[in-house]
Image (tube, helix red, strand yellow):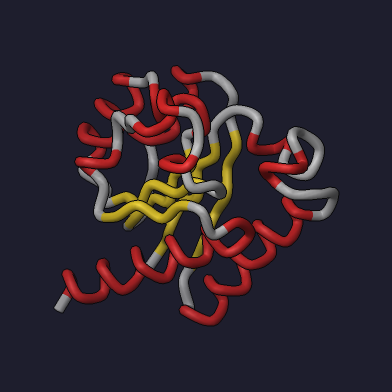
Length: 146
């Protein structure tokens, strides 16, 4: 089983930007490290990609060769019909993931263009967010196979 982790814009800056929200230096390494550790425990092959450009993200999604996607679209969560359409076009099951609780933040962040099409949504768990999303998606895919 292969799961693709896709991150949108500014997520490569975790630990540098708004540390009061996203965490201090080293947070990104902990986040990605926890994801890979969970993948190893689950026996799942993973790949992580980060991209700023909306069109490139859509291209990654529609050309993905994987069983599932964990996606943190960043700000595109609240604006991108293109990413929604790409995910629907791909027919690849996905979990939407956010490091912060988007529902406890500014009101404009409460609306996601992806959530209703996702297998699930994981938010607010900080450095454990991606690994929790991976665990849930893996369980969903295994159950679906049986």
